[in-house]
Image (cartoon, rainbow, N blue to C red; front, side):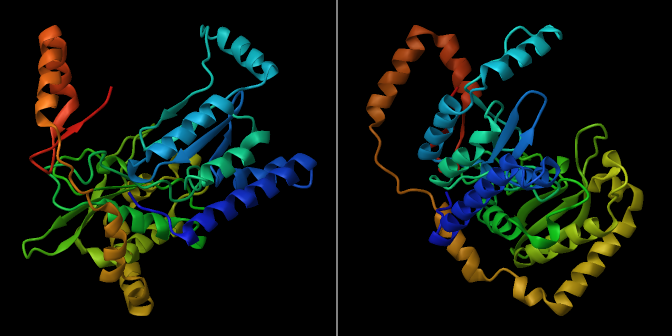
Length: 368
């Protein structure tokens, strides 16, 4: 997985320190709740019916064990409401027929984030500092901005994968983080990317869906879809570019989001997503994006094309680890023993939890 540089770590720590200052000013009355709201949202802090909710980003779904341990610590030590808050929540939910509200846990979302639902806002700065110690944060996991970029859960190991999408996802993550032009879009903006034949990343259900592939000439590029989404108006994304050279992806995304930012509706929350704009404008939207893309290339696109050296620098972080010789005999014995004890349960687990791996000598296993 991508390893943070000293710059990356300092950036996350500075962001946590900034949140602490904003929180203290809010608690002291210097910063009103209305003024504090967009600031905390940009760091992943919602205030819901009974208590705050924190959403932590897990870029393209990769977590290290040290990060999982910190998430577990946050659940254990911080995801605990006061007696007063929990009593009010329990009484409120009882009216709806819900008898129990669990605390002290986090859960994974469908877009590769982790959410906690009971952390008191007064402790939010401590949680941000703790996340920063393991290169984690909640930046742009909420608010009308470019959200966490998601990918195939099997990226890097799937046998049907033509190109590993993770280096591109990381480059796009760095580009979109605190992008000054896209901090206050008409609505939230979600991007997903895959490099596989099977669409496990559900790119057609995203504001922008990207499939990295090779064309007939063997060149690497992207098939670009836009305007997908679920919610009250489910829409399958529209194909807007059949093939885009890989090094122009940031310029093209800039054009797409810029057109959305310019023409997306801000007068109606339920009509503000890019899917509504694309369905209303059709080919005119695509024409506007192509015109904006051409303008970017003519004026400042060269500076924002991805150099091969940058792709190589990021790709190094996603190289598979050196293979270690496994004790195949011991593994076989254990598997045989399990199968003998409960053949049907083992076969069911084998069918549901074990997949083929890009390396024929290995398997991908889902632990459950």
